[in-house]
Image (cartoon, rainbow, N blue to C red):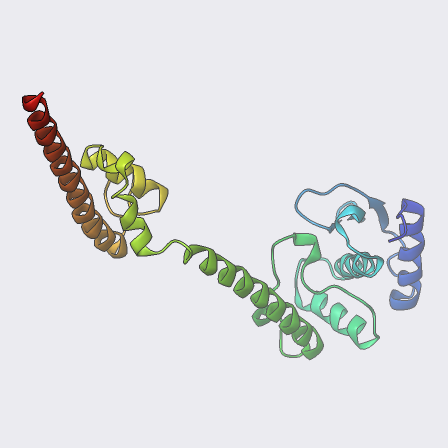
Length: 230
């Protein structure tokens, strides 16, 4: 992407103002700025458009944000009917305008708030929403895949480890339970699934302790018999 300067941004603003608004937005100023929660914004009282060039992946993205903010300048008052009318008009003319609330960062203009009289804006919002849902589903699938690498049986098995069953039950429960989301800090199961796992875990823990102490008893007994013969 070619480096953006305020002079280049101003030239683009004047170009769009001339071809899409017939010069009606000449009272506005445009500047480059570092924005924390948005890619661009418009200040009505100051008649100022600010664009964060570093947050855009391409020139087209930045052009879309600028057109979006210019639409706000042409129809002040937030995401109102006049604003959507500006977007609809720009889309009909083939302008690369952004309609996913670029100035609001993670905020989305959901399709349902766009009046039906603006079908092109609604259609574009449909595409944005489908893309957003695909991303969410991909993240969810990845999270489920990672989660299922730790099975219920594996969690129960950790209570049979020597370093765990040597602890008092309450400490063992909190140690493993907190790590795998079974319990809170007091050792209380967080939900029905956790209660089932804790029930199984306690049986495994008790069985491991019993086997451990039984093997220790047998070992000491055999050692004692050996000492008697010496």
